[in-house]
Image (cartoon, rainbow, N blue to C red):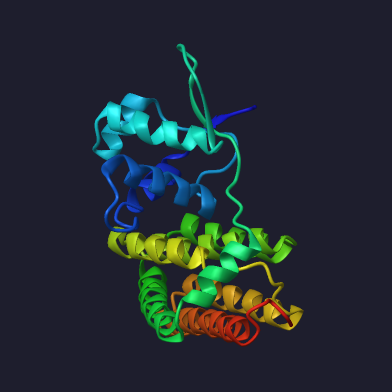
Length: 258
């Protein structure tokens, strides 16, 4: 397997996922959860080489022994492979793909009220991130947003499009130059990733999402903070409404009938 070292940006995002794990996990399981979430979100992808155990353990603030326990759990699941020696290390082996059944179950069991709470939080994060990005984003930030919007538009696979949309949300918070907003956006997207499922979005809705992405990018590029905030909030709330529609469809048709 060809491998490349993960970027500084990917490592930074991995570290910002700290705190997204469920309560009650031991430290090794927390780190495993962080790494799995990064793989699920596409922050870490097949062929990415993790830093050496000593470097990664130091970055994560854990002992090398704890890290080895975390990596062992990921190897058992077939998510990484590890080689020893001077040129050795751990490499991401495959992408995590949750089944439609798993995703449908999670969405069905999440109440409408909980989805609306997530939506309110998402809209607040998105709006403030876009507002600050309009003031603070540099040329590289804007070009990255443009690239993610284009890749979302050109991607056919439903799951890949969802990952690209998630990365777009996080990239807006990165452009806001706020590590706390980025951390909040990452943790929210990590939770939402397990609620989205494989039913194709109608072409008309996909076209709307693409237009919303471009409106956010255009407003940030134009340094129009009010327009950026409005566009980002609209985008976030429209996605929440879609999730709620799918939740209601699942609860009304528990066997998946359409």
